[in-house]
Amino acid sequence: MIKNIMRIAGALSAISLLFSPVLAGSHGKKAPQKMEMQMTVGETVKLGDLELSGSFTKAMPPAAKAGGGFVTITNNGYESDRLVSAASDAANMVQLHEMRMENDVMVMREMKDGIEIPAGETVMLKPGGLHIMFMKVQKPFVEGEVVKVTLTFEKAGTVDIMLPVGPMMMKMGQ
Image (tube, rainbow, N blue to C red; front, side, top):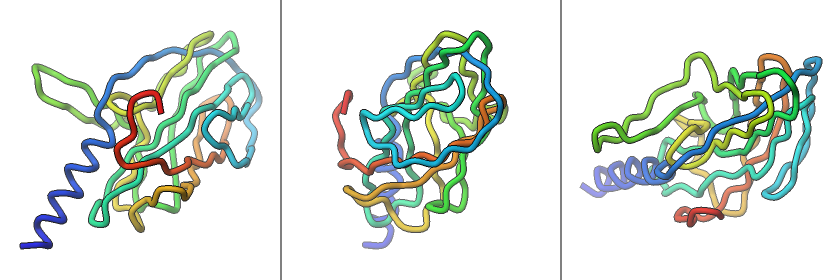
């Protein structure tokens, strides 16, 4: 019975990690490149015309097997780009997802074609909207640690970023 309660708590936590609103937008084109840096909340990493900032994830309860990753992507170029994939050793499966409310029902789906980053706009991957979905995590994320993620863009190339793990119940804007 305790095991079932832990599973339910883990599932509810994964849902709560992802629940809240989203904004969209972005622009740019550069030769593909690979960049690896420690990126913490408030810092910006540049990849071609793209700027990635405000990355984070949330701590997970012990039984959780899924969690979300979040980052703001600004496209300062004149051409759209597309986030086509995400990968991490922290989870057996990583996908790009969208969550939204549809007729009072929460709907989550994989963005199989990736996430467009329009020219001149900013796209926020944040709880309750577009996000990186970690599934079958190796071990639940712990507050104070970091999760390394490799993001691949159609035009700008590949970049490794670090998602600082914040508290399980972060308020909007944190």
